[in-house]
Amino acid sequence: MSQFVCVRLIQGNGLDLTLFQFDYDLTFAAFFLNADRTLYGRYGTRSSLKEAEADMSLAGFRDALAAALKLHAGYPGNREALAGKQAHEPRFKVPEEYPALREFKLKLDYEKKEFNGCIHCHQVRDAERRLLRERNEPLSDRDMFPWPIPDLVGLALDPEKRATVKSIADGSPAARAGFRTGDDLVSLSGQALVSTADVQWVLHNANDGAKLPVRVKRDDREATLMLELPTGWRRAADVSWRPTSWDLRRMATGGLVLENLTDDERHEAGVADDKLALRVKYVGQFGAHAAGRDAGFQKGDIVIEYDGVSKRLTESGLFAHATQVRKLRDRIPITVLRKGERVKLTLPMQ
Amino acid sequence: MRRVAMCVVCLGAIAWWAVSPAVAQDRKAKIVNDREAFKDSDLWTYNNLDEGIAQAKKTGKPLLAVLRCIP
Image (cartoon, rainbow over all chains, first blue to last red; front, side, top):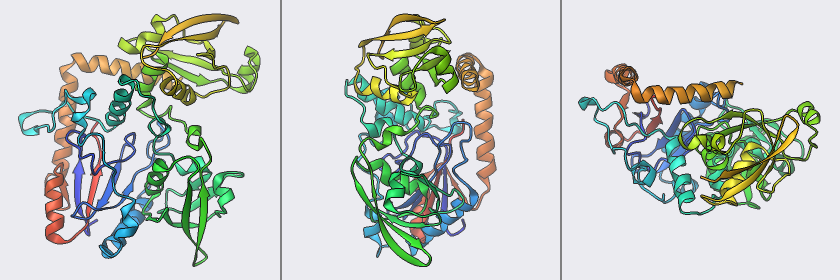
């Protein structure tokens, strides 16, 4: 650590979005930079609400630090390998420029006891989605399913390492590409990797059908594999654990929290395996999050048809339908099972 | 059940936050404690990216910027 100049940032107010683009649902994020603001890499991965830091480790962070130091030592000769890692031109340069965040101050002066009014990182993602929603623009898959973890393409990376393959899912894009357990990922799409977060950055920005060259170190030799991303690959992501799903629920379910039924529960309710069945686990009670309650939904209702869709969906898939197909202020028909009876309700899109 | 409970707790917390000076005090305490913990650090620059960049330029070291919200 002493080989770095270390800066601790504790709030999103005034956050430079031309530099800091990352998974805003993290509890901990780190950036490795040159003084000229060239980014060497990112650190920080999360795939669970309860176990917020299970995808990170001190050993993995140490490896990322070491990899960043190597990139620093090779700079500026390695600029080409870093080009793709740099942040893209953001819609707004700081969070406070988003309409939803204009009430916040650019800087909190703690000397003047301004201890409240923090912008939390997840509010940046919320503000972006809200902006699109209010403009009646559908959310893209990238907006809806941000920062995909490599597991989505069948590649589980070891949190204790920089970017080492821990396992590969059978039949997955990673299996088809020829990855093996223990492969050490050197680069992806030509970008040098210091962590799983760097892998996620490439995946986050990749399009359906993209073919991503991956340089791997295997048995002291290097090889190039080709990772092909199938159409709709990121739609398998579960976003329901994310803090930013809170605002998606406002938009898509009027504040209802929905959960999958088990196979036994489906059988008991008489719902086929390939059909929609999401149980209302919680009904919001305040403000816009009470729209579901006001529309007549009750805890325990089982949603079996949502806006004409009756195929099996997760809560995340339902969010996607609502924000990609439906617009603000649309009113959609929903059918639920309540005590064995079908009940038809209408929910306003927000 | 845990998620439901969490949502209830969150909503309750938000409502409480709006009315309770004790919460503001708690947040103040967290920030004060966090600043205090880093006050005498030779390693960390606190909440000032520009200062960190200036130091990195001066020393030739790379910069490590850590984002860690105080909830």
